[in-house]
Image (tube, rainbow, N blue to C red):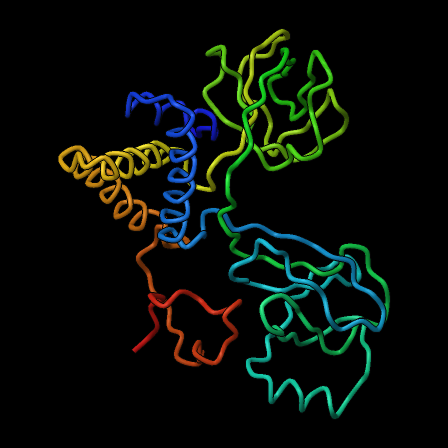
Length: 303
Protein backbone atom coordinates (compact mmCIF):
# COMPACT_ATOMS: atom_id res chain seq x y z
CA UNK A 1 0.00 0.00 0.00
CA UNK A 2 1.38 3.38 -0.97
CA UNK A 3 1.78 5.80 1.91
CA UNK A 4 1.53 9.56 1.82
CA UNK A 5 4.24 11.82 3.20
CA UNK A 6 1.97 12.61 6.13
CA UNK A 7 1.47 8.93 6.93
CA UNK A 8 5.20 8.29 6.73
CA UNK A 9 5.91 11.13 9.16
CA UNK A 10 3.24 9.92 11.60
CA UNK A 11 4.53 6.35 11.48
CA UNK A 12 8.09 7.49 12.09
CA UNK A 13 7.05 9.62 15.09
CA UNK A 14 5.22 6.61 16.56
CA UNK A 15 8.20 4.30 16.05
CA UNK A 16 10.63 6.61 17.86
CA UNK A 17 7.97 7.75 20.36
CA UNK A 18 8.87 11.40 19.83
CA UNK A 19 6.35 13.84 18.37
CA UNK A 20 8.18 17.10 19.12
CA UNK A 21 8.40 19.68 16.34
CA UNK A 22 12.21 19.49 16.31
CA UNK A 23 12.15 15.74 15.77
CA UNK A 24 9.41 16.06 13.14
CA UNK A 25 11.66 18.32 11.06
CA UNK A 26 14.52 15.82 11.22
CA UNK A 27 12.27 12.86 10.41
CA UNK A 28 10.97 14.70 7.32
CA UNK A 29 14.52 15.19 6.09
CA UNK A 30 15.51 11.58 6.72
CA UNK A 31 12.38 10.16 5.06
CA UNK A 32 13.32 12.11 1.93
CA UNK A 33 16.92 10.98 2.19
CA UNK A 34 15.83 7.35 2.42
CA UNK A 35 13.59 7.83 -0.62
CA UNK A 36 16.53 9.17 -2.65
CA UNK A 37 18.66 6.17 -1.65
CA UNK A 38 16.05 3.56 -2.56
CA UNK A 39 15.06 5.25 -5.81
CA UNK A 40 18.68 5.19 -6.94
CA UNK A 41 18.80 1.43 -6.31
CA UNK A 42 15.84 0.64 -8.56
CA UNK A 43 17.32 2.76 -11.37
CA UNK A 44 13.84 4.23 -11.90
CA UNK A 45 12.65 1.71 -14.48
CA UNK A 46 9.61 1.38 -12.24
CA UNK A 47 8.82 5.10 -12.49
CA UNK A 48 9.70 5.83 -16.12
CA UNK A 49 7.50 8.57 -17.56
CA UNK A 50 6.97 10.53 -20.77
CA UNK A 51 6.60 14.24 -21.43
CA UNK A 52 5.88 16.12 -24.63
CA UNK A 53 6.68 19.55 -26.05
CA UNK A 54 5.57 21.47 -29.12
CA UNK A 55 7.72 21.20 -32.24
CA UNK A 56 8.40 24.67 -33.68
CA UNK A 57 9.20 25.21 -37.34
CA UNK A 58 12.92 25.90 -37.79
CA UNK A 59 13.76 25.42 -34.10
CA UNK A 60 16.47 22.91 -33.21
CA UNK A 61 16.81 23.24 -29.42
CA UNK A 62 14.23 22.11 -26.83
CA UNK A 63 14.34 22.07 -23.03
CA UNK A 64 14.73 18.74 -21.24
CA UNK A 65 12.32 18.36 -18.26
CA UNK A 66 13.94 19.46 -15.00
CA UNK A 67 13.07 16.15 -13.31
CA UNK A 68 14.81 14.01 -15.98
CA UNK A 69 17.87 11.99 -14.99
CA UNK A 70 18.33 9.66 -17.94
CA UNK A 71 16.38 9.50 -21.16
CA UNK A 72 15.44 6.31 -22.96
CA UNK A 73 13.93 7.26 -26.33
CA UNK A 74 13.20 10.51 -28.19
CA UNK A 75 10.24 10.57 -30.60
CA UNK A 76 8.80 13.08 -33.07
CA UNK A 77 5.21 13.13 -34.28
CA UNK A 78 4.39 13.28 -37.99
CA UNK A 79 1.13 12.37 -39.66
CA UNK A 80 -0.21 10.84 -36.46
CA UNK A 81 2.77 8.45 -36.12
CA UNK A 82 5.52 8.63 -33.51
CA UNK A 83 8.98 8.16 -35.06
CA UNK A 84 12.03 7.38 -32.91
CA UNK A 85 14.99 9.71 -33.44
CA UNK A 86 18.58 8.42 -33.49
CA UNK A 87 21.18 9.93 -31.17
CA UNK A 88 24.45 11.51 -32.29
CA UNK A 89 26.95 10.48 -29.64
CA UNK A 90 29.60 13.18 -29.69
CA UNK A 91 29.81 16.94 -30.15
CA UNK A 92 32.35 16.82 -32.98
CA UNK A 93 30.06 14.77 -35.22
CA UNK A 94 27.10 16.95 -34.27
CA UNK A 95 29.01 20.07 -35.23
CA UNK A 96 30.06 18.52 -38.54
CA UNK A 97 26.48 17.52 -39.39
CA UNK A 98 25.15 21.00 -38.65
CA UNK A 99 28.00 22.71 -40.53
CA UNK A 100 27.23 20.88 -43.77
CA UNK A 101 23.46 21.29 -43.82
CA UNK A 102 20.81 23.60 -42.36
CA UNK A 103 17.84 21.91 -44.00
CA UNK A 104 14.46 21.33 -42.36
CA UNK A 105 12.28 18.22 -42.53
CA UNK A 106 8.88 17.04 -41.40
CA UNK A 107 10.59 14.17 -39.53
CA UNK A 108 13.89 15.06 -37.79
CA UNK A 109 16.31 12.13 -38.00
CA UNK A 110 18.95 12.86 -35.33
CA UNK A 111 19.25 14.42 -31.90
CA UNK A 112 22.08 15.53 -29.63
CA UNK A 113 22.07 16.26 -25.89
CA UNK A 114 23.63 19.66 -25.23
CA UNK A 115 24.96 19.88 -21.70
CA UNK A 116 22.42 18.68 -19.14
CA UNK A 117 19.17 20.24 -20.22
CA UNK A 118 18.78 20.72 -24.00
CA UNK A 119 17.78 18.33 -26.80
CA UNK A 120 18.83 19.50 -30.25
CA UNK A 121 17.17 18.04 -33.40
CA UNK A 122 18.48 17.65 -36.95
CA UNK A 123 17.10 18.57 -39.34
CA UNK A 124 15.02 21.21 -37.60
CA UNK A 125 11.29 20.50 -37.98
CA UNK A 126 9.74 22.10 -41.05
CA UNK A 127 6.41 22.80 -39.39
CA UNK A 128 4.73 23.43 -36.04
CA UNK A 129 3.39 20.29 -34.34
CA UNK A 130 1.49 20.57 -31.06
CA UNK A 131 3.02 18.13 -28.54
CA UNK A 132 5.11 16.75 -31.39
CA UNK A 133 8.27 16.00 -29.39
CA UNK A 134 8.24 13.23 -26.79
CA UNK A 135 10.94 12.15 -24.36
CA UNK A 136 10.70 8.93 -22.38
CA UNK A 137 12.91 9.21 -19.31
CA UNK A 138 13.71 8.17 -15.76
CA UNK A 139 12.67 10.93 -13.31
CA UNK A 140 14.38 12.24 -10.21
CA UNK A 141 12.88 11.47 -6.83
CA UNK A 142 11.43 14.81 -5.79
CA UNK A 143 11.67 16.17 -2.25
CA UNK A 144 8.42 15.72 -0.33
CA UNK A 145 7.43 18.79 1.69
CA UNK A 146 3.64 19.21 1.56
CA UNK A 147 1.04 18.23 4.15
CA UNK A 148 -1.73 15.76 3.31
CA UNK A 149 -5.20 17.02 2.35
CA UNK A 150 -8.39 15.39 3.67
CA UNK A 151 -10.91 18.25 3.93
CA UNK A 152 -14.56 17.28 3.44
CA UNK A 153 -15.61 14.09 1.64
CA UNK A 154 -15.64 12.79 -1.94
CA UNK A 155 -17.84 10.84 -4.33
CA UNK A 156 -16.24 7.98 -6.29
CA UNK A 157 -17.66 5.51 -8.80
CA UNK A 158 -16.35 2.04 -9.55
CA UNK A 159 -14.93 1.99 -13.08
CA UNK A 160 -14.65 5.79 -13.32
CA UNK A 161 -11.53 7.94 -13.03
CA UNK A 162 -13.50 11.01 -11.86
CA UNK A 163 -13.48 12.09 -8.21
CA UNK A 164 -15.89 14.78 -6.98
CA UNK A 165 -15.35 16.66 -3.71
CA UNK A 166 -18.06 17.96 -1.38
CA UNK A 167 -16.23 21.29 -1.06
CA UNK A 168 -13.74 23.34 -3.09
CA UNK A 169 -10.49 21.67 -2.05
CA UNK A 170 -8.70 20.43 -5.17
CA UNK A 171 -5.85 22.38 -6.82
CA UNK A 172 -3.84 22.08 -10.03
CA UNK A 173 -0.72 21.30 -7.98
CA UNK A 174 -2.28 18.03 -6.79
CA UNK A 175 -1.52 16.38 -10.14
CA UNK A 176 1.03 13.64 -9.49
CA UNK A 177 0.08 13.12 -5.83
CA UNK A 178 -1.75 10.01 -4.68
CA UNK A 179 -5.43 9.74 -3.77
CA UNK A 180 -6.96 7.05 -1.62
CA UNK A 181 -10.20 6.31 0.19
CA UNK A 182 -9.68 5.82 3.93
CA UNK A 183 -12.97 4.20 5.03
CA UNK A 184 -11.76 0.66 4.27
CA UNK A 185 -13.87 0.19 1.13
CA UNK A 186 -10.88 0.26 -1.24
CA UNK A 187 -7.30 -0.88 -0.71
CA UNK A 188 -5.56 0.97 -3.54
CA UNK A 189 -3.84 4.31 -3.99
CA UNK A 190 -4.25 6.17 -7.29
CA UNK A 191 -2.11 8.84 -8.91
CA UNK A 192 -3.93 12.05 -9.76
CA UNK A 193 -3.67 12.68 -13.50
CA UNK A 194 -5.83 15.74 -14.10
CA UNK A 195 -7.43 18.79 -12.51
CA UNK A 196 -10.85 19.87 -13.80
CA UNK A 197 -11.98 22.24 -11.06
CA UNK A 198 -11.67 22.82 -7.33
CA UNK A 199 -14.25 20.04 -6.86
CA UNK A 200 -13.29 17.60 -9.66
CA UNK A 201 -10.08 15.68 -10.37
CA UNK A 202 -9.29 12.64 -12.53
CA UNK A 203 -7.15 9.64 -11.65
CA UNK A 204 -4.54 7.87 -13.80
CA UNK A 205 -6.53 4.65 -13.51
CA UNK A 206 -10.16 3.78 -12.97
CA UNK A 207 -11.36 3.58 -9.38
CA UNK A 208 -11.69 -0.08 -8.37
CA UNK A 209 -13.37 0.19 -4.98
CA UNK A 210 -16.99 0.45 -3.88
CA UNK A 211 -18.94 3.36 -5.33
CA UNK A 212 -20.41 5.94 -2.98
CA UNK A 213 -20.69 9.51 -1.74
CA UNK A 214 -19.57 11.05 1.55
CA UNK A 215 -16.34 9.03 1.64
CA UNK A 216 -13.31 10.06 3.66
CA UNK A 217 -10.10 10.33 1.64
CA UNK A 218 -6.45 11.35 1.67
CA UNK A 219 -4.38 13.21 -0.92
CA UNK A 220 -0.66 13.55 -0.44
CA UNK A 221 2.81 13.39 -1.87
CA UNK A 222 4.26 9.91 -2.05
CA UNK A 223 7.68 8.40 -2.80
CA UNK A 224 8.29 7.27 -6.38
CA UNK A 225 8.77 3.73 -5.12
CA UNK A 226 6.71 0.53 -5.12
CA UNK A 227 4.23 0.81 -2.26
CA UNK A 228 5.43 -2.31 -0.45
CA UNK A 229 8.73 -0.54 0.31
CA UNK A 230 7.38 2.72 1.71
CA UNK A 231 7.67 1.53 5.31
CA UNK A 232 11.43 1.14 4.73
CA UNK A 233 11.67 4.93 4.77
CA UNK A 234 10.34 4.87 8.32
CA UNK A 235 13.07 2.35 9.21
CA UNK A 236 15.69 4.67 7.73
CA UNK A 237 14.45 7.70 9.67
CA UNK A 238 14.36 5.63 12.88
CA UNK A 239 17.92 4.44 12.27
CA UNK A 240 19.11 8.03 11.87
CA UNK A 241 17.12 9.14 14.94
CA UNK A 242 18.67 6.54 17.26
CA UNK A 243 22.15 6.98 15.82
CA UNK A 244 22.08 10.68 16.65
CA UNK A 245 21.06 9.85 20.22
CA UNK A 246 23.79 7.29 20.72
CA UNK A 247 21.40 4.31 21.00
CA UNK A 248 23.52 2.16 18.72
CA UNK A 249 21.63 -1.09 19.39
CA UNK A 250 18.37 0.39 18.14
CA UNK A 251 20.19 2.17 15.31
CA UNK A 252 21.75 -1.08 14.10
CA UNK A 253 18.39 -2.84 14.22
CA UNK A 254 16.65 -0.29 12.00
CA UNK A 255 19.66 0.06 9.71
CA UNK A 256 19.64 -3.70 9.15
CA UNK A 257 15.96 -3.52 8.17
CA UNK A 258 16.63 -0.70 5.72
CA UNK A 259 19.72 -2.34 4.22
CA UNK A 260 17.78 -5.56 3.68
CA UNK A 261 15.05 -3.60 1.92
CA UNK A 262 17.64 -1.82 -0.22
CA UNK A 263 19.15 -5.12 -1.36
CA UNK A 264 15.77 -6.68 -2.11
CA UNK A 265 14.35 -3.70 -3.98
CA UNK A 266 17.45 -3.63 -6.17
CA UNK A 267 17.06 -7.31 -7.00
CA UNK A 268 13.36 -7.02 -7.74
CA UNK A 269 13.12 -3.70 -9.57
CA UNK A 270 16.50 -2.82 -11.12
CA UNK A 271 15.61 -4.64 -14.37
CA UNK A 272 12.93 -3.67 -16.86
CA UNK A 273 11.48 -7.20 -17.00
CA UNK A 274 11.49 -10.43 -15.00
CA UNK A 275 13.04 -12.33 -17.92
CA UNK A 276 16.49 -13.85 -17.49
CA UNK A 277 17.10 -13.81 -21.26
CA UNK A 278 19.99 -11.57 -22.30
CA UNK A 279 20.20 -10.40 -25.89
CA UNK A 280 23.39 -9.49 -27.68
CA UNK A 281 24.49 -5.88 -27.87
CA UNK A 282 27.81 -6.35 -29.67
CA UNK A 283 27.34 -3.41 -32.00
CA UNK A 284 26.41 -0.85 -29.36
CA UNK A 285 29.16 1.32 -27.88
CA UNK A 286 27.44 2.55 -24.74
CA UNK A 287 30.53 4.47 -23.62
CA UNK A 288 30.14 6.96 -26.47
CA UNK A 289 26.51 7.72 -25.68
CA UNK A 290 25.45 10.86 -23.84
CA UNK A 291 24.84 10.48 -20.08
CA UNK A 292 21.13 11.20 -20.57
CA UNK A 293 20.63 8.19 -22.87
CA UNK A 294 23.30 5.87 -21.50
CA UNK A 295 22.01 2.64 -19.86
CA UNK A 296 23.06 1.61 -16.38
CA UNK A 297 26.61 0.23 -15.95
CA UNK A 298 25.37 -3.25 -15.06
CA UNK A 299 23.49 -3.77 -18.37
CA UNK A 300 24.73 -7.08 -19.71
CA UNK A 301 26.09 -7.22 -23.24
CA UNK A 302 27.03 -10.12 -25.45
CA UNK A 303 30.47 -11.69 -25.30
